[in-house]
Amino acid sequence: MNTSPPARIAQQLFEESGLAWSHEPIETNVVDALLARHYRLSGHLERLATEKDDTFRLRTGTADHLVKVSPPDEAVAVVALQTAVMRHLETEAPHLPIQRVKETTEGSDNVPIATKDGRVRVLRVFDFVEGAVLARTNPDPHQLAKAGQMLGRVDLALRSFRHPADERRLVWDLRHFDQLRELIEYTPSAAHRRLAQEVFRLFHEAIVPRLGDLETQVIHGDYSPYNVLVDPGTDGFVTGVIDFGDSMRSALVFDPAVSLANLLGRTPLDPWREACSFVAGYERARPIKDTELPLLPVAALARLTLRALITHWRAERVPERRDYLLEHARDDWVNVERAMAVAMEKVVARLLSTRHDTP
Image (tube, rainbow, N blue to C red):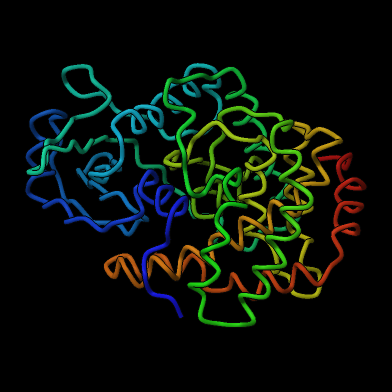
């Protein structure tokens, strides 16, 4: 098993994505002081596990807030992009349950924090959205379609959005997947390496020749079951969409692919069932082009494989986030294998047959 850092393109993408290195967590007392000075907020700060930010839940006794401090290697312009996406949705689609950004007392969206080495971290405060994460529920097909429809509405509202930093390079962006084959060698299991090689083959043959022609726009980038809050007792089901940290300009079809990657294999006897329900809902709001829909299953497999490859490499090198990382990827290889047991042609046919289902 190779334990050295990934080379060349992969290393560059890790660095630009803020995932290459660990960093010293910001001290709670520093955050407390900044919140009091710039937001006139005080209360109990509870640190939350996340992929790379320092994230806290602030309990004030009246209203809760989510506090995020960006990692020191994430560009300020990228943080501005994330905030601008949320502000755009608040203006263009105020009916959507998007997490809101709280202004400072000076009227700014954030507070810059200078680090000892001259870099800048960014503190932001958001409304805390109550609800159960989709990952902790057992949604039926109708509810999965509701979750898909919500992402379609978000993507529809983002269709006109532009930002100077929206062309950011992110290791999670499937546009770069074919260039990350070297990650396979860091996987200890020979069986898993074979699965990964087959997914790379499918992606290279089906999607790489089409990359330049795919419809593009700014997308959420990480509409996973952990970033969707729901209430099974309501008609709309989805009560909150959070975490725009992976927003970027990419192929539109890659946005639902992220969601599908998290749904594959969860019903072992019918590994694509939940994915098909989700896509049926998504297309009610934001139809996928006929020429691009057949690419969606391969893109979903690629995203799931990518997470499995990245997660275990990072878990060994960022031990303070190990539990968080492994929790989100514990069944990835099993689900890749289950999903690949179904011929892609059959999956595409099923997606086409369900795209006109009624709500």
